[in-house]
Length: 220
Image 1 (tube, helix red, strand yellow):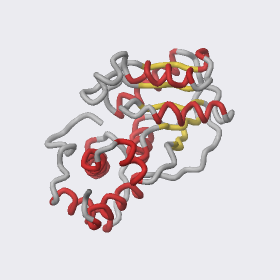
Image 2 (cartoon, one colour):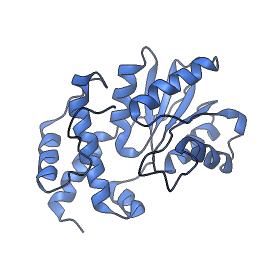
Image 3 (cartoon, one colour):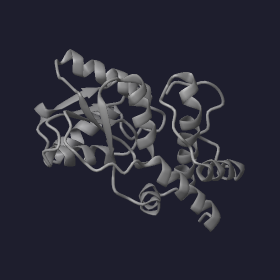
Image 4 (cartoon, one colour):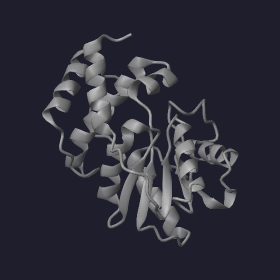
């Protein structure tokens, strides 16, 4: 177990990175690919609650999903949503994206090709990716309006499910670093980072939570 100070810093990042939007109706809910099938669960919930008439799952593979999702993230998400009761005809997939920027741009292209108007979009993602997803979509897909949705879990609950504290905290520091650096590269809109969040980030980096940090310019 990590010590209490490190966990408090991790919770500071977790709370900042979540947007806590109320769920509302949208033209489409887009599930952003990752290792976490919980994204598909949340997207299915939105459809089954009549908050969207259409789901779009986006994502190919990454080193963290290649073994777990050999058919690709979007395909596995689709299969999970169908298991949960979403009709196949209510699901589109985009199977090529490898990063958040591609998730957004490729999904927009799929909807345009399908002739689906999407002025309102719910971005469904891992809990700590909400702010990053929102900032990326606002930069790359104007003038659509966006809200975020993710599992309603605490950091401790999420860590228990993943089963590895260090992995989760490394993901938090990596996401926060991108929030800070990517706006200057044109990958996302600029976000206000409160001093307390910045200090927590620096302390976690100093404590060795660095495996997800970028060393040079990367895609969003």
